[in-house]
Length: 154
Image 1: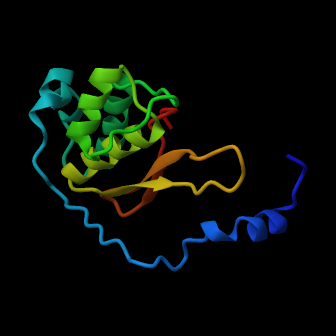
Image 2: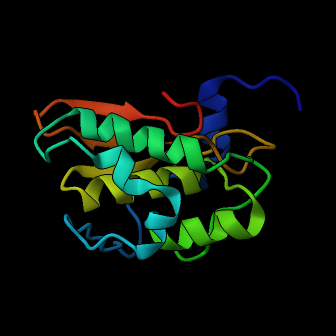
């Protein structure tokens, strides 16, 4: 593919513009949903022990939990049904999950512990890529905002 300037790329692939979707998608994220029982299998209580729900350190401990127990493999797709429990099952079946799956899992655990969090997806803008890296946008209990990356433990 010959070199194309960014403006030319944007003009060429204008059909990817999703700034005004035909049908808005309603998404709701709930805080303090019940934790799945499968977390016990991974020694989850050890990671939240000693943290209150007003402690920013809880978010970083949950990041460690995900990184310690679930591997990244960019060649393995994320589960079709999102959610922490489905992502864990998917990891158990395939041995790993892609960055989207890890981010969905971490964001879900953060919300289950009362923190506002969601996974953030980059939009593709050039061939041959059909997907980009995914991270977690989290509001810590202190009110600070942080980006967490479970793929690279950042």
